[in-house]
Image (tube, rainbow, N blue to C red; front, side, top):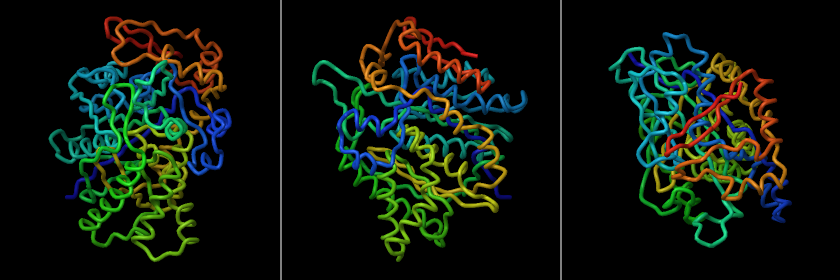
Length: 427
């Protein structure tokens, strides 16, 4: 009997605050036409009392709360996927496991592989389920990342081209419950095309900054998109790029990059003309940009953010196949696929992802500039700090209003004492 596995539930948490990207463009006196080509509308911005742990817990809690006590006990694996870690040794999964109140007979660990990490965690969890070593078990996979763009007083920062990355670097988390009941997204088992090689396109040699070559990263992304599909087609010979997938989801540094990649793939693998390719983008790819255009690039979680958007906004009167392309700098990539259905769409919509994004506080440019100050950021390796929620009273007030309106509690970083982090719920 063929085993099935995949995503039983998915949720997205896009933080509490955002900036309007076109407002940012005008503030920076940038070329607004160039910003429009990025196909980004908003980007989430992390607050001083938010970190990858709080993002992850806030994404996962609605999923956990929807489970029965017996179902919660069957979570036997928690994987955190991130390149925004808080410690070189201690896994963020330990905090997530604690604050979600999960069973102690559980395997906890963390994955880091640039923007591929979320797919790596998903595939590892799926194979745990398929192995059958613990029938009926479930896995919680959380991809959580945030971009910190800090203003420094010297030129020691390795942050890449500010004009290119500032409008796209986001903050957020995507939580997946993986099981043998893939009600949201049933993976096509064995339909995977991987393609990887060593390239120095981007890296993070120190915890709080990135370095690399944006042009090289684009070329590597395009190469991997093509070659991972070629490998996928070796394993699924009947696969056709134009017809096999009703929707396509991409790792999305920004929408314009995805549009270029899709155009490149259509030219290589189909005979469609330019106008037809444009219509195909609107029909098959644009649904997957629904949330990416509002959150920004959240690294390992971005392709999963795209998947959530496609399922939430697509049409599933009959089951539909979705193709996914995951890319992580350095590099590792994979094309894989699965099937989504109308009941799964209803389950995704019940999470109210869009409403959560609507409830975020819109930052003024003055508030945003204040958040860019290094003094406002809890940096990697911070030993002792107490979160100051009075620093931005207007933002904190809007958070309380959003929590009250939604009826969903949110968790925030309270204190770091001798490197140990503690968190508090706002209810």
